[in-house]
Image 1: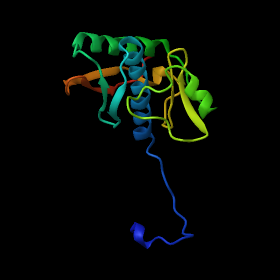
Image 2 (image 1 turned 30 degrees about the horizontal axis):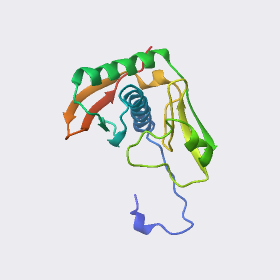
Image 3 (image 1 turned 60 degrees about the vertical axis):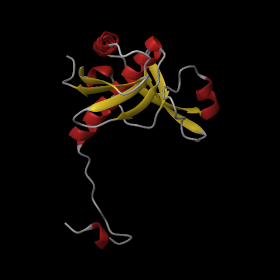
Length: 169
C-alpha cells in the first residue's frame, strides 16, 4: 500500500466501511440519546460531556446527587424502552423552527451548529434532538445497555460508562 503522501490529485482510491465497527458506534450513539432523554426528563439534568467508542462509551451529566439506584433505574428504564422497539428517524428542520421546540438541546454548554437547517434525530415518542451523527433505525438494534461503571466527578458532575450488547429478539 502506498503512503498517503504519494497520492496525487486525480488519483483513484477505494474506500471500505468497516460495517461491524460502524454499527457498534451507531448502537452506542443511539443508546446515548436514549439515556440522555431519560436523565433530562426524569432528573432535569443535561449532558456535560460524552465519548462514544466501540469498547465502551461514557456520558457525563450534571446531576445534583450521586444516587446509584436512581442512575441504575434510568438504565433499566432505557432497556425496557428498547424492548418496545420505537423507530429512530432523521429529518431536517429550519433552525429557528427547531430551536422553538421544547427539549431540543440536551447538552449543557453546547448549541447546535449555526446552520440554516438542522438535522433532527427522533426516537419516536421518546426523544428528539439536533444531531448529525449515525444512528440505528429501531431501538431493538441497540441490544441491551449494560452499565459498566459510575463515577462521581465533582460537586454536580457524574459519569456513566456503558456498553451495548446483542440485539433484543
